[in-house]
Length: 16
Image (cartoon, rainbow, N blue to C red; front, side):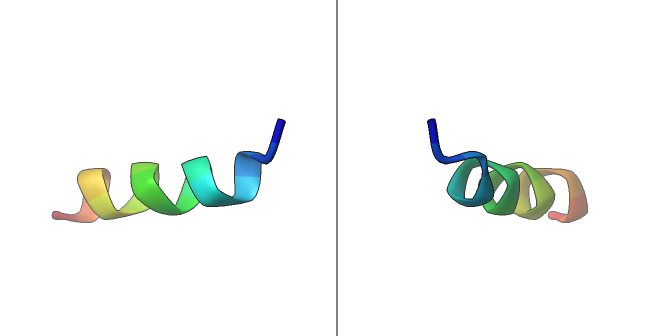
């Protein structure tokens, strides 16, 4: 499971 990509999405959602 690639968490890097998911982590990026989470960061964008949180920082958005």
